[in-house]
Length: 150
Image 1 (cartoon, rainbow, N blue to C red):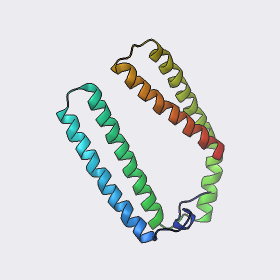
Image 2: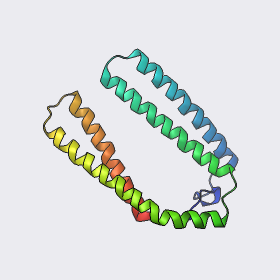
Image 3: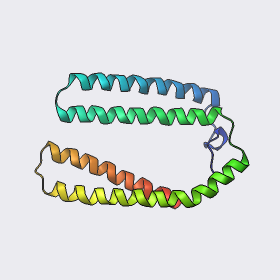
Image 4: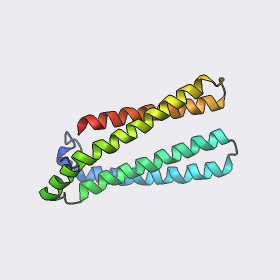
């Protein structure tokens, strides 16, 4: 089972403590970004701009969580070999089923969005749906890649 440790991140070009310090800085920046996007959403009335700010806010929240997870993995003691083995055995059966279920959901959404987009003009709604379609296609691709790694 793979576990994030500093020695399996790749080339050791950065000192571990420096990396943790940088992650802490990134976390603060993303927290600030989330607050600024919230403020912008309170100011702007146009629904499309509000949606864009909301999406950016969610991305910043996601980035913050990724930075926090990396930091946590770097400072915590790795799980025992037994815990890793057990997790691997359970994950080997459960994870593919869950991934397949999500892949089917994404495929359904992609098909539906493509049909709807074909019936829309060149307006804002079409652009928003195209943007969501791009996200759904990226999600689908990510899930398909994950299932091959199991």
